[in-house]
Image (cartoon, rainbow, N blue to C red; front, side, top):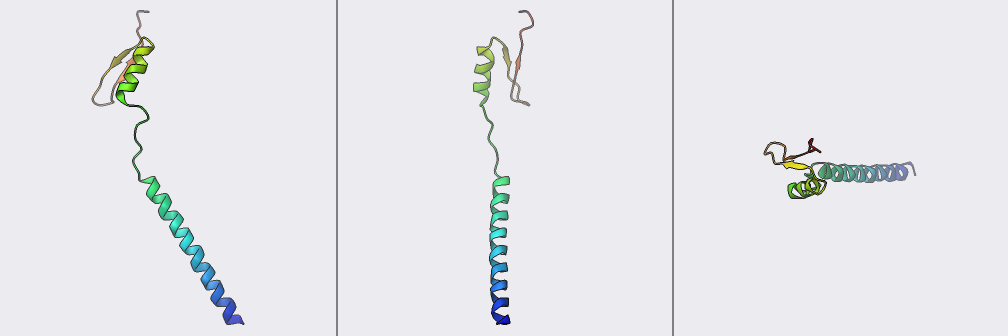
Amino acid sequence: MARMRSASSVRARLIRLGVGLSASAALAACATAPIPPTYSQAELKAECERHGFWWHPDELTGGFCEHDSQM
């Protein structure tokens, strides 16, 4: 009887280990996926100009919106 309890205990531990490793692998795979930008540069430019600001394209940062100081 002690041997039966030991075998089921080992089996339960192996199942828990397998579930834990599977969950870890899934989380690691999701963490390395690239996250695309929320808005494209064209959408950012359109939003900027819609509010009456000036859009300045920039290769390094992608561009920025500037408030018109003459208003």
